[in-house]
Length: 111
Length: 113
Image (cartoon, rainbow over all chains, first blue to last red; front, side, top):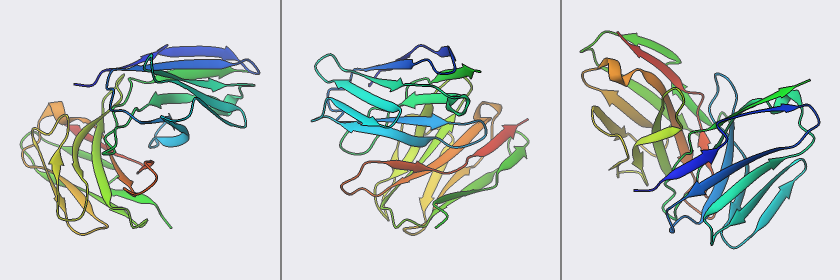
């Protein structure tokens, strides 16, 4: 079956610094690559996504880069703020809409 | 527009009891999903429904049944709850059209004693 690895599992950054989370997948049928943010006690929320025909996408302080040949994609958060503290999940998705979630990265932004 | 709603928010069961988790979406989405989330793990797919009238097994279907009642509603049933089913359950929906985004509900925290 599909295998998704997400690193690191925890990430502590100083406010204002950058954070990078990497997701590696094995299913070559994956063609949609979202990142979800989950705050305590809530469901995951989409924060950014990228499709297989694009290498990079940016939305204000967050960006996602995709290397489909190497089968990995990364989440970049710049100028981190305390409200960025949450668990982040990658979820490579196939054309049927079936997500395979990574184990998650706990991000802690310290003032 | 409430998005995806789930009931109940919390539930405690004894081993062997049964219960149904309810999920509804008001976004006119075709596809609906049930996931479970255990500590330190990502979400794992239990069952999904690609369209009204169809259901399929996901990664961890044992011990669960589902019903796609209509386009809006997708329920998850535990016939005989076990402690291993203690988890947080999330329902999600997806349009199934040009966008592949899944929208998640707030979750149901279930404890089986």
